[in-house]
Image 1 (cartoon, rainbow, N blue to C red):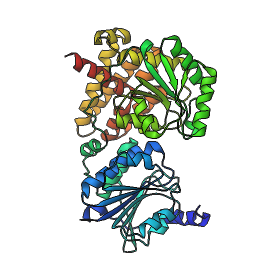
Image 2 (image 1 turned 90 degrees about the vertical axis):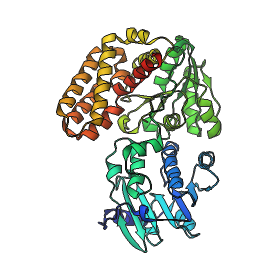
Image 3 (image 1 turned 60 degrees about the vertical axis):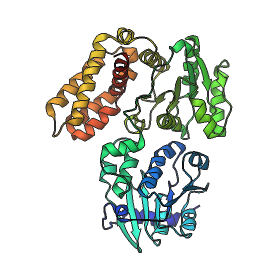
Image 4 (image 1 turned 90 degrees about the horizontal axis):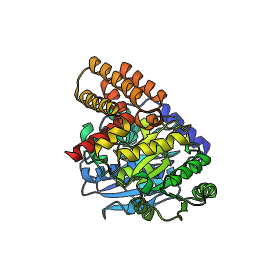
Amino acid sequence: MQAASEYHQDSDFLRTAWPTRPYPVSTIRTPERILFSHGCGVGLGDQFLCLPLVRALRQRFPSAQITVLTNYPEFWEARVDDQVSVVSRADQDAFSLLELSRIGFDLVLAGYHPGCLSACAGLGTTVVFCAGRDLSSFRCFITENKRTFEVPLKSCKGSLIECARFLGLFADIGVIPSDPAQRTRLLYDLSDQPQLMVCGLPESQILIHPSSAKPHKEWPIQNWVDLAKRLLRLGAHVSVSSGRTSRDRQVAMSVQEGVPSVELLEQMPLEPFLQLLRRFHFVLSGDTFVTHAIAAEGGPISVAVYGPTDPLRFCPPQPHNFFLAPLAISTDQFASALCCLATMCGPGPLSQVEAALGTRFCRALAALRDRIGALGQSTGSAAGLRAEIERCLCRCRGLAGKQHRALLVGSDELLRRLVHVLRHEPTHVVAQHLGQSPAARCARVLAYRAMQET
């Protein structure tokens, strides 16, 4: 464990003004050995965001030998090629990083650990990035020949979605292209729509993953119990995930105690668990690694409850990822939203979906999608288009059934936030917020259904 004085030394380091140096890695030609460390406090879900960064390093420096320092070796060993070696360290600290660095690396890219900024200042070419710490929100430093520079993070800080911020960070460093469209394709190919057709809710296989690495992000256990009972009455088969830790299993057992008829899955290694996810039609959870796993590797439809964390920022942008917010959402609202989603993604024709949701609502949703697309291609403030989008949002809210509103358009608080962004923020910020909104996600499903029938 690092001494408190060392952490305060980092605090002073972070608050110091340093000369800037943009795109520092772009000038490095042929490093033979590269060390990548994601830093401390990075959970399993964040590994899915770090993986494209290591793949980007491989593309940028194809002949280099890359070493990954991680406390999730099983995850990395299953996803990297032979030229990437994985070093397992449970203690992601400055000493681990410094010890490995002394072996001899031409380039070190490291996330934040207490003490690492000061420890790495004496190394060769070292990039240290701090993502969302209390002392700094996305700052990046590079040390060369015992001189320290700060890297301007224009692309990183200009992104709303967390996965785009990670990619923006590497664009600002100079590892990947600065073009947003090229960066997005490095993470997820959004043009490759997944197969959203599932069976109806009465025949569906549903997995509940009730726990989170951070308990304050969990939906109450009693809510999961009540929801499981509702789903069983509708004819669904419900399983509960035991997760990966002893606390995960304790939470899962608490759910099963309230609903003995659900299937309690045994704990298993990570890779078999990720394969098991493909057996289900829906996976219900909080803001946890499961949502990122489904986004990155495909599989079922994910519906996550967000509360303390911002769903527009942290919910993956994939077409099969949906969210409900806030954390105080009721069991009835969750069950109604799931029934609505099963109808939208079910086996019936599009006309059946339109009849269930309302033809006028579906038309308003299609109009909103068209205008969001036009906004993304516009230049300038596009004031008239913004006003049309605001009217479309309000119309969608008015036409959406009250019981389905949480899924289709979001909470009133979220709508007020979107309207504020529409009126006051730059166009690229508006486009990101709207693209992450519940209405845009549902509009993509209906557009995909229409495309499948033509």
